[in-house]
Length: 173
Image 1 (cartoon, rainbow, N blue to C red):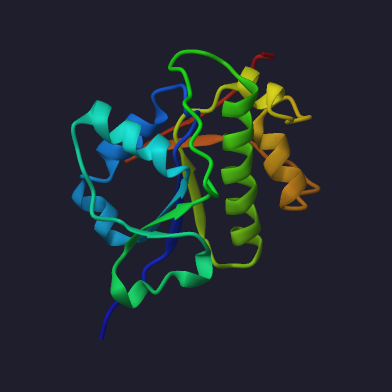
Image 2 (cartoon, one colour):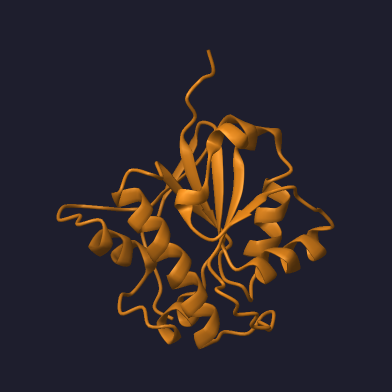
């Protein structure tokens, strides 16, 4: 009997940053076969990350989460570009980069609220681009708390094996 896997949304991060390349590299790791992975973002951003990393992936591309059938595989790309093929400039903050990140993050959060996604992982965001793109919060954590109706304490933990870290400070873009 097949083991039930958790569904993880994997966001590309800022299109102008290192996130798309990191996601491309991560998808080559065997550990990604332990879960159902749904990469959420714009197809051209992912392809640019693949070019930089030198990897290619055999992901099934869909435009709506309901098109995904995890019986057909465990790695999918949920393309949110809707025909948009914006050329993002590397290392440059922009409204368009922020809007792309916010679109992917908001979709992942909605899928989490619907219990279709059990965890969200993402490449690095750029707070300045997020602000330019319309984020009214100081960081993505406050946006997530609002979208997920978190009314009590929340914080960020980073975990690698048995090594855990938490932020004690933040910054304003």
